[in-house]
Image 1: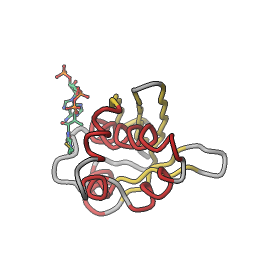
Image 2: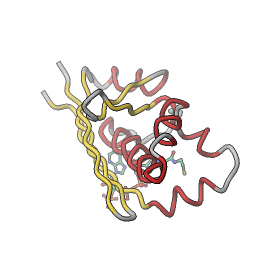
Image 3: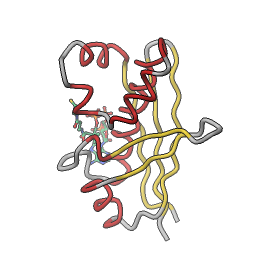
Image 4: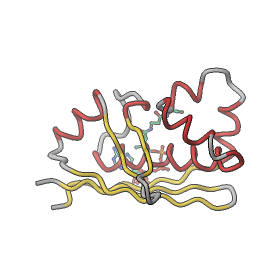
Length: 124
Ligand SMILES: CC(C)(COP(=O)(O)OP(=O)(O)OC[C@H]1O[C@@H](n2cnc3c(N)ncnc32)[C@H](O)[C@@H]1OP(=O)(O)O)[C@@H](O)C(=O)NCCC(=O)NCCS
């Protein structure tokens, strides 16, 4: 059963600004997300924009937004085929479980200066 759905779009210009503020990306992204994105070279910023959209899509899917959660508690990684998966920690995981969440389905896309994410939360 689907218990939550969220969608978000992020423009790359927002990430470009954050990149210029020391320590900001480290506050918003899990170290492994940053390392994976940086390994993509020119694709780094689009990759991070998509991951930020995924965090906001998750906030909408749980219905509370991201308030009270650490952004690093919501981490996106790709499986061996490139499919994105969401891994939760701390307060984000607790809110997800309180909502009856068992599994998250995530889809990302990015082109030119925009990235979009859709998150679906499945319950029992
Ligand atoms: C829920 C949240 C993710 C919305 O993101 P946003 O970028 O401000 O808003 P968007 O333009 O993408 O989406 C707006 C829509 O989200 C929906 N929305 C708002 N609150 C929502 C909630 N609690 N649950 C689900 N959907 C929600 C509404 O439909 C809204 O549109 P409407 O007011 O016209 O109906 C936001 O409230 C949030 O949690 N922000 C935290 C961001 C943050 O921590 N940033 C740190 C770096 S600056």
